[in-house]
Length: 354
Figure (cartoon, rainbow, N blue to C red):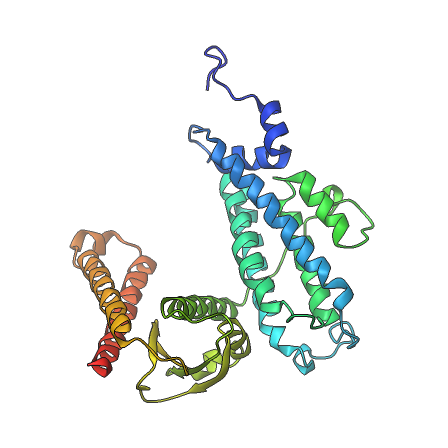
């Protein structure tokens, strides 16, 4: 951009078109430290879409305000949250609390280094993906069902902290949402930034597992043209059953499973889904199209085999192995082991169809 050439964007005109927060978002997200700014109005559109996402999340949460149950807020009363009949949401709250703490630590480091663009991308991903796409879906009550006050208050608290993280980048919408969430004694712009303690890595790993399993099972449902209201029976073959104890209820709700059981042997006549080293068998009364199922499995097998070849090529490169950090090598080895496990599962599934 050059003032002399007259090709600089008219910021006031862009603010009128997209809004001040969207323009701030677009400029900062596309300008990493030390690099030239490649200005593109699509970044402003992304900021405007982010604004809409925040408003929609606010509307959803505020809809729950009048649907709070009469159950005593057990957290404020000092009672174990697991004692609540709504304990299905305990893991979701625990997971997002740790995820929020993890991002706070990460953002603190980025802000100290003045890496504003990366900090904005980090909080953007936390809000759009973790909070809106996952957390709110996990704690959302059923149609016309109540929401426990402890769950509602915790969600509002999370929302407030997210607005605090986002406030330096998008001050106007965050201040407005801050006051619409509940009656506030002070403005967000003078609220002291709060820091969190260390995070529980085990809970974060379980959260990643849950998201991965839900995504893969939903993909399998869509590929086999299951209607959203059609229920399934889910059978899990795993060597680590304990990993699913705290997430079983959420998993059942998210994939519309009427029951979940754990098996030691493969289940014939089921759709098989491999996630890392675990196998998931989808049983349904719906008649399965074995031809389509076999075709999808063969495509998936080819994809996994190609991916395994790329990983093996990287691990077979002596220069890469000698120069790579231990954690990078460990990640590549994990990719290799997980892909080999998926290939075995697909081959076993194909054998049952022959």
